[in-house]
Length: 337
Ligand code: AHM
Ligand code: MG
Image (tube, rainbow, N blue to C red; front, side, top):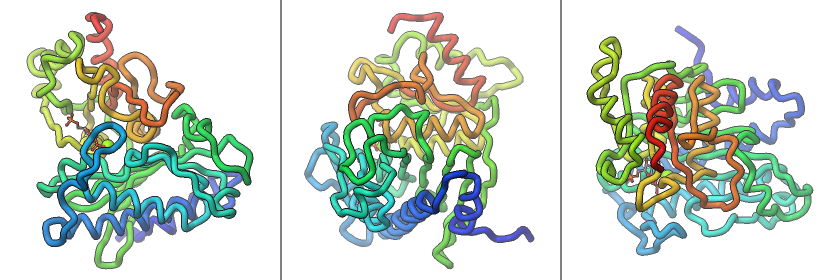
């Protein structure tokens, strides 16, 4: 039987991969795992306690905030503030970046961007949801409040990124730029244990994930790519399968393991797509590249986009290299929009 390795042990073991690491990043990652356990516990009670449904408040993007969105946001913020390694947080659930004002936090060197509860429309119906996060070193001087520039860094500057899927089991997957590893939560001992070491995404896959309900509003190249998936893929790759949960973390996790492409292109109603660059696209792009795949907005590498606002959106083409490249071919052949 292989040796059981907990997330905590693994993080400490890998700390030596960072020449300048002083344990702060390790401590930060363990605070994320703590908040994930608390959110996991609450999600498992959905339906039993008054935690499902909407808060009655819309977030800055005009989307209805769910009670668990708000709960997860508070848990992650509290866990991050408590450990003194983070000076501020940008969250899908906060209009502006949250600046931690304690002196120890202002001396911290990291900022975190997160979607505390991704796919929250799935909560009330017992379908998988997730958390997505990424970590940057601040640019502003230590000891001062963080500035916009700390949060608006291009994705290639991420020092770590990860996601949690609260699914049939709960899994935390992260990278610090040295490969991708996954840890499944064992509720009997309250610990994430290494279950998916050195994850790589197959170069090809048979799964395409897209909300086809938006079909008539897609650019011509995307429509043609979908037709290709349905009708024209070479015989050795057939049949393609359409799988779409409506939770990026969950859809991406499946495609990472099995091979596949996730697409959220521009639509008429969302010319920049729906997904948020800083805390949805960038973390997934960092992870997929570390696993051997690619992520673009249909043209530009996601990690090279220089953001100019916290809740900026970007179209997303994410997954197995050959599949994303084929989708690009269709976009180039039909450059309407
Ligand atoms: P959310 O963060 O508000 O839950 O929105 C993001 C989610 C993604 O997880 C998911 O892939 C997508 O929105 C689903 O959108 P749609 O319902 O338009 O397909
Ligand atoms: Mg989301």
